[in-house]
Image (cartoon, rainbow, N blue to C red; front, side, top):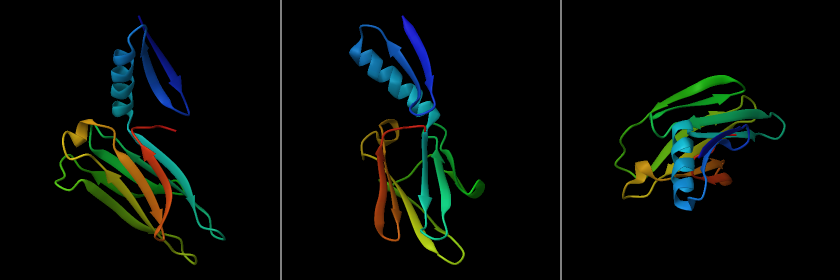
Amino acid sequence: MLAIVACAHTGTHIWARSEPFGQRVLRYCADMLLGMDLTFEVGEREKHSVRYHFNQSSGFGSVSVDGETVKRIFQMLALSTTVHCKFSVGMEEIHHVDIQRVRKRALGGFLPQTYRVIVDGKLLVEEVGNRNS
């Protein structure tokens, strides 16, 4: 028996009764289809809301600042285990943002990946897996 539950904070999860392994596999598959969605704020005096979205199964993603898309991403194959998405935010108070997507070497495209948000050389956010918020 399957139950599909949609949650604004954790994304859509599918649970399989009495199958712990099946439960994990189905939850991961649902999350992989949805992709990673990170939202964070940058700046002290001049605040900006940044949203990063990357769909691991399609390879498409985007970065938006204050609701406007500033960067589109498409990547299906990477030789490097770390992929950087670098951009600057702000007019008077400029911040350099580096969003890193780190995968494992073997089967890295099919496993949960680590996402790091580095602002002005300091780690701001680190998430593992596929999460929608």
